[in-house]
Length: 83
Image 1 (cartoon, helix red, strand yellow):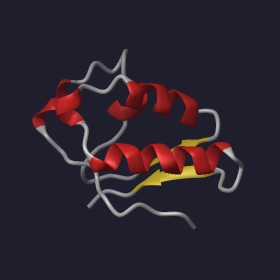
Image 2 (tube, rainbow, N blue to C red):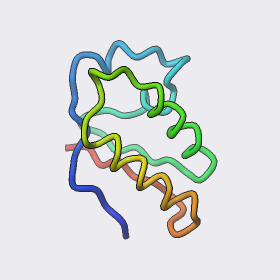
Image 3 (cartoon, helix red, strand yellow):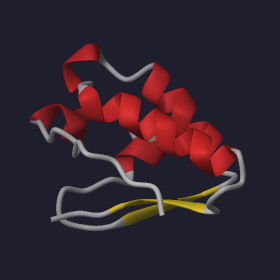
Image 4 (cartoon, one colour):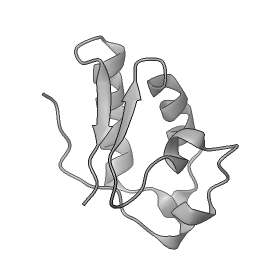
């Protein structure tokens, strides 16, 4: 199992994300879990690349690293675990 140290820094800006432009990130909620499969991870990576700067933070780099773990086939799913 691979894991990250940082959690998503929830701000009001996440609620303002356009679900048509950020469908993968829009699926994240602070209290629920989200699972991305190998086909969804490239879409998630593309969304992380265009994420507004005010929603970024250490978690973005760690999420990218975990996406790469999934892309290499070491794990089949990327889980975000809510509080």
